[in-house]
Image (tube, rainbow, N blue to C red; front, side, top):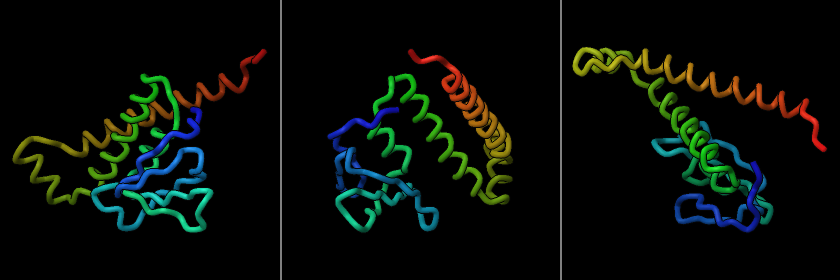
Length: 136
């Protein structure tokens, strides 16, 4: 992944910043709400900006990826966020969903976790292959 210099990145709340001035992204864990919130550290400010987008979506806007990698990364991010939300569903609501509409969130949670784990294992293998490949 390579950061595109001079690209304007949408941070949410009507804020845009140049990609080459963004030096750090830190997800806010508390009070994230329905939208993901992130602290964005920029080289021209002492205090971070608090923005309404997830760190993954900001990073994907900053970087250049081949389109298939970009779509795969977006899908992984979406699945991770969905997994977090599904995990927070109360046991009572889970039972109601299963009884009323035959949606078993436990099964969906396991399937999403397995899929995300497959992706991270594949990335680790690719990183190892890059480590030992000869670059002329």
